[in-house]
Amino acid sequence: MTMYDYLVVGSGLFGSTFAYEAAKRGKRIKVIEKRSHIGGNVYTEKVQDINVHKYGAHIFHTNNKEIWDYVNQFAEFNRYTNSPIANYKSEIYNLPFNMNTFNKLWGVVTPEAAKKKIEEQKNVLAGKTPVNLEEQAIALIGTDIYQKLIKGYTEKQWGRKATELPPFIIKRLPVRFTYDNNYFNDKYQGIPIGGYTQIIEKMLSSELIDVEVSTDFFNRKEEYMNEFPKIIYSGMIDQFFDYSLGTLEYRSLKFESKILDRENYQGNAVVNYTDAETPYTRIIEHKHFEFGNQKKTVVTKEYPSTWNKGDEPYYPLNDKRNNELYQQYKDLASKFPNVIFGGRLGMYKYFDMHQIIGAALATVKQEF
Ligand code: GDU
Image (spheres, helix red, strand yellow):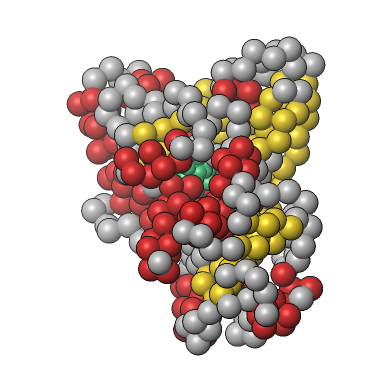
């Protein structure tokens, strides 16, 4: 037997929040992490004195004051407000869809004129209830915006036709009839000054927690299962069961980063490329997350890609087949009461950071 109370598999936000809370309650925890560093996908790395979001842009936002206060224990947050812009064949539009977007596109000045334009364009649907993303987008915002700002981006991101994607994906984006470029509706928003890695470091800093990086759970799964009374597992749920019921699918991403010898490349942290021809969906210029004025800059192109076993899983493909398969794995998981499955991969669901912290705290509540 081991001296530990818990084995935490994966040092992302889910596992680290759990470990922090368990240590606070006097438990001993071992954290193992497959990568050579802690933090999962929120990991940030200093390059040219700039905090680089190595696994994609992470902007913290929440409506929940408790979670906002919780995360602020571990870092000071700045006033960053996500206001991405869209580049469609060198035409620039504000996101999310708001009066600035409508004005640039149609020259309309008032909300009333913008609404009228959208109503006219919606007529192509002839009152039909939207059954796919294309129809949902047109119903929300009309054909012009759909063609310029949605179709190309969406089809690149998901590798499928917009007519074959579920409507709900596009409902994540706000549509506003005010001149407000804030991407999120949440009350609280910001980026931790100095990056995200410090948050995870602090969460795992207790002397009751031991961390082992470059350690793959699956190299010693049987031993771990016998040794530890309880396991918090935040890896892929299907891999845990050796894919015995089938493989859950994901969409993957490839990142291409460059250091540029100039101070400011694109004037914004996030620029979406919404045409079909540009192979990447966006370029991130990391310094702008923290209003940096370093001499150089670091930019990352984000290419969506097909996921094959062994690739980094990013977006769960929550279609019918995959959701049903996940449900079967979940039923199987319930037969292992000493293993808690958590996080985006363990629960096969795209979570924002605040939701992951919420889910980890709910697990803590159940456990203690
Ligand atoms: N979409 C477009 N055009 C755009 C942006 C989005 O059509 O320019 C559609 C796509 O179908 C996309 C959907 O809207 O799948 C949802 O968009 P999100 O911005 O939520 O999707 P992302 O994965 O691109 O978003 C991620 C995070 C956001 C935010 C964003 C960075 O989920 O919370 O951090 O990156 O701006």
